Image (cartoon, rainbow, N blue to C red):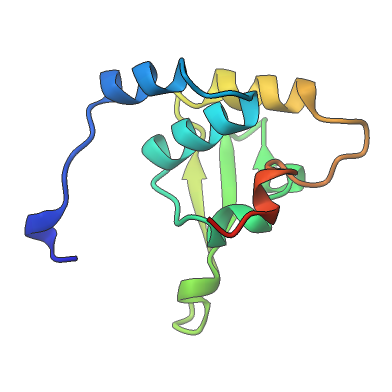
Length: 109
């Protein structure tokens, strides 16, 4: 898809869509995709809680798609719009849960 075919999705539209998500994990995924701009599903599959640096307010995203070009990962800030959703997901995670998207990482669609 060329750049002319891409649409900008306003924040208000995403926040309205989040209200209709059936689980908190889906809410986080929607917010994550909008404010982090990550590739789905490749960059969320291996995203772990160890990749979240709460002190520095950053996320390390592993990028399989760009790994062969010498960019195996990228560091992104935890944006204010994302932080409450990420914190809640952390609170909801089972003890010892490794993955941030423990259920959705298993889906291919």
